[in-house]
Image 1 (cartoon, one colour):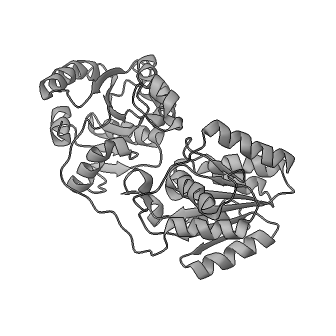
Image 2 (tube, helix red, strand yellow; image 1 turned 90 degrees about the vertical axis):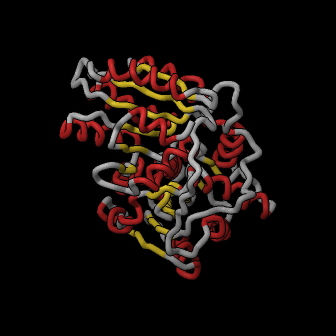
Length: 373
């Protein structure tokens, strides 16, 4: 159905969310209609952040907000839903719009398989009534569902529309771009050249796909890399766990700006532990580029100042390959925690592949390398 028609049926005027490729029609419509607007539309750091922000909107206006997300974000909303929104606590009504990745019977990437299986059950377990929208769902069916939802919302309960692949339509295009020239895949190629046989933990999305492709192009083994295909925002914590237990190895984390923002507290933990063998690289294009290019607040965030405030002894920002190569070599040689922010353009090649190994094979190959080489 047309995304505009869905939103008219819901009847809200405030939206907060974390972008999802399955909800690209919704995200593009909101960007074209509102952009990033303090009164109507805010892209937050993570789904729990969105939920709390939307709760504040309700407290200030008495209106019902909408929170949108990929189903992988359900884990991030469990705490505020159960301990803040629930009608046994503050009874704050909210409409969730959830992209259903990994729907049973629909092919998807490994990180979405189990999440897809439990998507509806998690909502039901949290006493959230759901309605599934597919390609064949009619507007009348959605209207009827919303009429039922409104009765629940008036009681301070939460409801959710679960969106199947291809269910929402939006004809207009949105172009997402910034003013930087460096291409992420080339940045990763430069990183690989300097790291040699050092282990790399890479973040969710296209960065891990490009790292895999770089190894393929170089004829290198994939054993050096742990690809964090899911669990967005946690790659630096995984890298910290590896670095603390393998102090004799230089460990590299290739991170993204959206991922860093999602669980930014991990930087404080990194800084407090300050492993001498860890290099944290944040490729910052100010966008959720993997799921369509919608903006993050990282374009307005001073990553270097944040890292230093968190206790990183070394933190720099670069926007050229010459500066990148220089800082990579310095970080490899020094025995102190380092952060390198790399300002990056938005976009990737259209024929970018996906890892051909399974997640379990990736883990086993990486562990065999870490434990035995």
